[in-house]
Length: 280
Image (cartoon, rainbow, N blue to C red; front, side, top):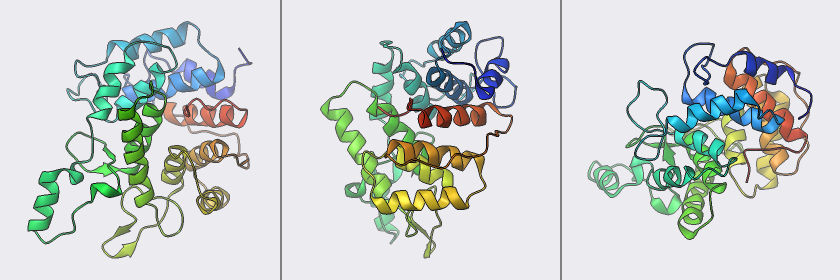
């Protein structure tokens, strides 16, 4: 195990008594717990704190194979992708059910019912030929971020034709949502007749989920990293650029005092050193 970084030390200090992590020191939630565990995996910290956190994740898998954001939510959502990413680093048999849950999820706008409804209302229907993404919550529209995380999780699952096909659909969805300035917004590339503007976070996350990226996409990511002021955006852009073979500039060694931010900072640091645990 390498010497402990400031971000890892912070994460270990914020672990709750139940083994999980909260957003800002509060009760445990699935998302910050998953990010903390992925950061600990990247940095080689698999001691007792990791084991307790991993057990927290395992015990909260729902009967349908997915995960809910917290114990108070009674429905599996997008956080299933994050939990699956953690489990794929363990060889645990539980991922099989999570994979099935993700394979069965998809954006509502590409369903037959929604496409028919759009046509009857005189609206442009979403074409499944342009890809099918994933939503934040079941039976809602697909968005760039949950689609990207689902792709990353499935890419680490045991390979078969269903998994490969669903990944391809998700990547087609991302490519069809690329903005004119070269990056990605949260949703469509255009809204109310106006071209959407790329954001650092969404651009980095989308690029990370693509197997191959055109030079123009990476150029856009480098511009966003150079001109941006967002620590969160810088972390995701660094992860994406490293994954596609470009060496990003190093962002100042600061992170806001939240678990997801510290985890992202640690993931980006480890990726620059050759340990990108989010990619297959």
